[in-house]
Image (cartoon, rainbow, N blue to C red; front, top):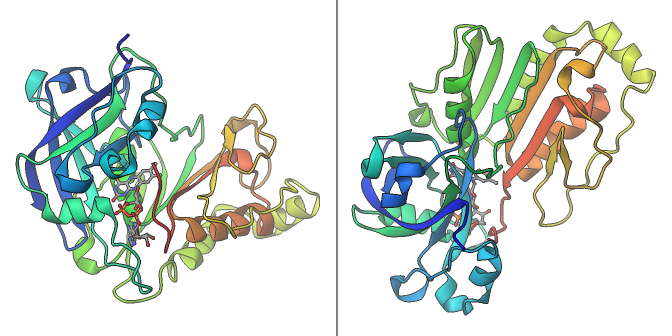
Length: 327
Ligand SMILES: Cc1cc2nc3c(=O)[nH]c(=O)nc-3n(C[C@H](O)[C@H](O)[C@H](O)COP(=O)(O)OP(=O)(O)OC[C@H]3O[C@@H](n4cnc5c(N)ncnc54)[C@H](O)[C@@H]3O)c2cc1C
């Protein structure tokens, strides 16, 4: 039985360091003629498996239990699986290419591995191969979290790992969309001019340039939310207990993943649409992705301190400082 998703070895067709922190690869495979979700790409996530010892990629039968089959491969031949985003799909037919922006980062201060994804991207050249798990047109795949419903005020917050997803979301927004995107990147040279949305969506870049991760972003987001709502009404609504959800504790190695339709912490998830929510933040939809502690901290501020309904917010840990991701 073949899989309703694409599970194929792809080849690097082009690679370019577009900025100090982003390596852009174009991956190609014959099966990519059918690549993509059926609708807009938005923040579509995919899996890449980087070669293991000796540069070999594992051979995995394309069946429903592809993940079990991958885990059954001896560890030193299995390679390393990581999650990325389809930034774009270009070309046609068998020349269809998947564009992926991979953030290159330095090894951690405690001498942790610099990461197989990072190492691969730094050295990538045309002809290199990687295993790709991605959506096939005409089949359900999942992996798109952008679900603003009828929201009229969009708040997007991302660090560099979620910039490719934000590029896709902004590109695919309707012309009348309204909101703000805050993008934190390592340095001024990592600001990418083509990350643009409709006229009503302001894009604010926050290069760290050596400052602490998240230092600027939290204040800017809170400032922005103050402007969105009547502060007095927000306080009263919160005191009346709009949302009593406890913040997710951030003491393990897990990534925070709390969206209107899924709770990684097991909280009850209501039949959620942004329009069902009243109060001073009615109409708001927030999509927040990046380093897990930054995301958890913002969740605490938005849900606990400001009383924003969790049905209006997607909080997604994309990676965690000091922790190597596992497939
Ligand atoms: C839905 C989703 C979509 C994603 N999309 C993208 C994408 O399009 N592009 C992209 O680059 N990443 C993306 N990521 C994040 C990516 O999966 C992680 O950064 C992953 O850890 C990279 O793997 P690695 O092999 O480089 O490092 P790992 O082996 O996972 O980690 C090794 C060490 O590097 C550190 N590290 C990992 N990433 C970074 C970083 N960016 N900066 C500094 N230190 C880091 C870790 O904390 C650890 O100490 C996405 C994640 C998710 C969940």
